[in-house]
Length: 275
Image 1 (cartoon, rainbow, N blue to C red):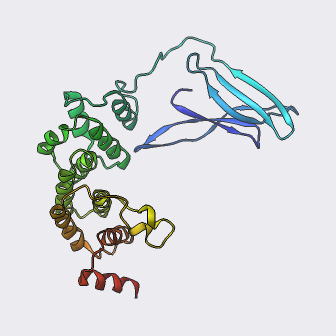
Image 2 (spheres, helix red, strand yellow):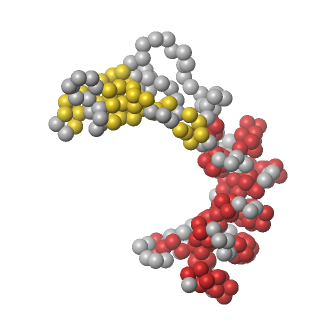
Image 3 (cartoon, rainbow, N blue to C red):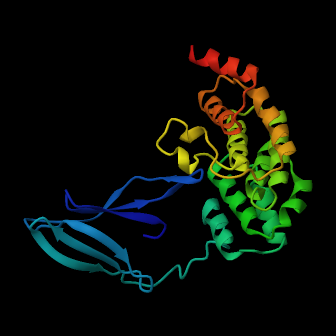
């Protein structure tokens, strides 16, 4: 029963086990009954806990006038697996191995292992994996992003690096997202670029605009990039609009509001969308 989930069903008095099968960065499963009551004795599981040392499963039952108790389910037999190691076990799902590396390499300088993991996965079609790679870059040595620039091999890799670099190198992130906007046809990547631009502008939702119509179009804090760089990226974003993609156009409109643009071309384009 490793590598799965236990689910408690209070209503029907069952505990299910869900063996997890990899599907991209997430999982799919077909639940199977692990425990259920027999006869007229009530069995209403309310909570589950696994002992970190023994692996015993503890089950509490009760609630709403039903019988209360705690059961322990213990495995009897030889331990065929031993303790796990998500970082080094190839059978462990990729996202899990990446997250393990994120946890164990905080503040590391550029290492062969780190470099290999990032470059192999920063162009992944799986968004979750790219997000994990960005987080890994963010937690590495601040100078690591500058080394990685020379190894970029795709627009997807560039935006992944940009998301991992915006805290320590916001101007580099701005240059990267501008280059991605110039060479990608993917609305998903364009949306990622525009959202990152919003963060570089100071992120959305000023505190004094909460619960107003303006909150989603206002700046929370000061810009992280110089005015000149901001104008360069804004010009690239402006040239996209309108795209015909509802979600992307919505995020671009947010950016327009954040910079308080009074450009007549932008105002005309926005007006055409609402009339």
